[in-house]
Image 1 (tube, rainbow, N blue to C red):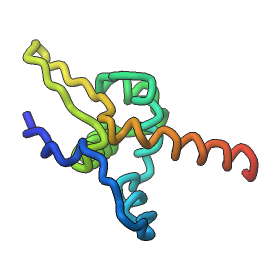
Image 2: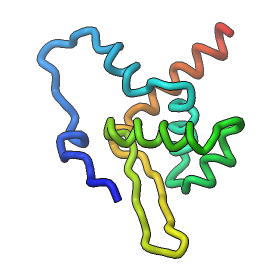
Image 3: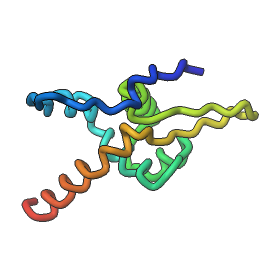
Length: 114
């Protein structure tokens, strides 16, 4: 089981001035599959198998990599239950849930322009 991220990942910053942090946001959302994983978790907690079934075309390796990346950035939490076999569930953190508006706006832009 991986150690939990520091508490600072869950405390929003109150910026004095707003820099161009788009690159930082894109780093957190990096990868082909991150948006689809976030979309799935917007609906609530999911297990690995549920995510894999719901995201067409994602390999177990790509899903694992994406989940680890998002967890490392404090966007989701991984909860391991000591069952046989082990049960692992993924849930958005407040930081991850806060991405909902960004994803919604991107969806609207796509519907309008693509």
